[in-house]
Length: 64
Image 1 (cartoon, rainbow, N blue to C red):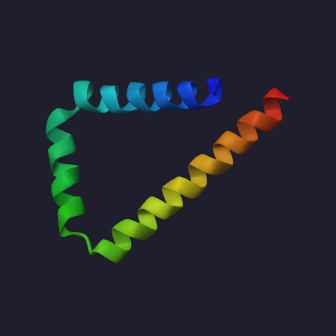
Image 2 (cartoon, helix red, strand yellow):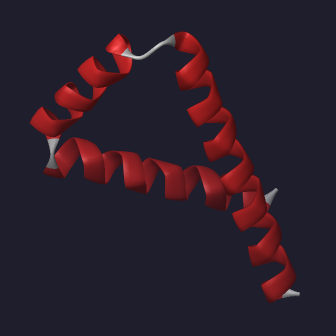
């Protein structure tokens, strides 16, 4: 359970940094994503998901 809380906290920190440091750039990125085909967005999302799972798995192995 503590790993999930840590992960959510890290996500919120990164998201908060994006909103705080580059709000106008975020709007440009969102517009770019709107123009992208849904299949491509899905593949990017799946790749990000896979990378996140691998990073969590590596962190667990290193910590053990």
